[in-house]
Amino acid sequence: MKAVAGNFTKMYFRIFFLLLGLPLIAQAGFLQRDVDFSNYDVPLYTQIVDRIKAKIAPRLGEGALTRGRYFIIPFAYQDRENHPEFSHSFIAVIRVFAGNNKQRKLPPGLPTRKYKNWEFEAFNISWLPRDFLTNPHLCVFDGPGSRLFPKNNECPISPGRNFTLAETIKLAVDAKNAVAMWGPYEIRKEGFDLGVARKRLLDEGKIKYRADDRLYRKDKVAISCFHAMAGLDELYPNGGLFGTGFKMWGFNGTARVLIEYSEKASNKGLLLDPVDVKKDRFVFVYAPTAGGPVPYNPAKSAAAYHR
Image 1: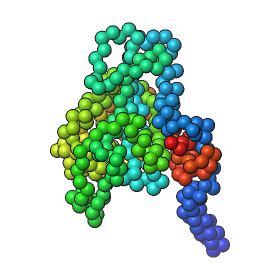
Image 2 (image 1 turned 45 degrees about the vertical axis):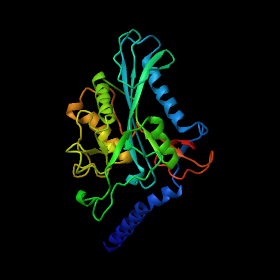
Image 3 (image 1 turned 60 degrees about the vertical axis):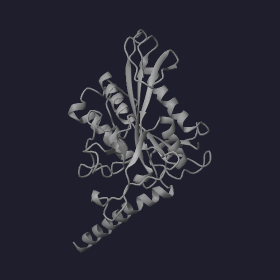
Image 4 (image 1 turned 30 degrees about the horizontal axis):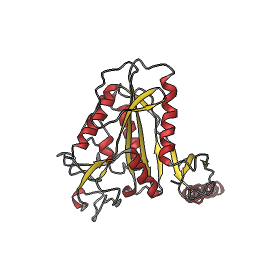
């Protein structure tokens, strides 16, 4: 019995140390990761737009559309340690017009564009401080115990701005972050209308930005990027640990939003496609050189970019 107990103890500690060392092994690059460099010289924004087109076009068919079609593409970016100040969640919304739709009610400020035989419009929900392009230093938690106690957080409230997809991807590229996208997922027109309403609300300039919005979203003072895109039928939905959105940033934040879109009762029927937050995720990673090592790759397979 002692021998059996001894062998069990040794096996236990071997498993323990193996699990303890797995993150270090992964970071050191010993676990096989598949990185596609075929579009390495294509700017990341172009890679993303091309992927969206390639995914949506086959679903539209060859002939003229008899009805409008609507899609969402959720996104996130994050750094190696998923620091909240270097992470972001955002979403693109697209409408493809019906071929016979002559009387179109267009949201103001959204130009109509064309791809092949289809006309479409697109916008982004990407909520950040107004000056973030020139001052990309985000204050998330500042003060002793501020992660647990919102009153201890000394981060200021900032004027906010809804950034375009191109601007948001530039922020990710400048920081050399990993960028994830899900979908495109088809949605009903009602879901598209909710997205338009949220964009208009943000563009009004009445609501400000704060990454930790626990004390401010109830009174409609400030909102985070997570809450700007989560729950499009609610102004300030809760989420995450303690119902606060805590730990809901980067990839985790967008995955949480997708779960809410697909499972929440008030959202039923708005999302037409099934969602798998793990399998549906496609990741782009920064690589300093073509075919060379990748500093941070959180996915089993990814596409490389450098600009």
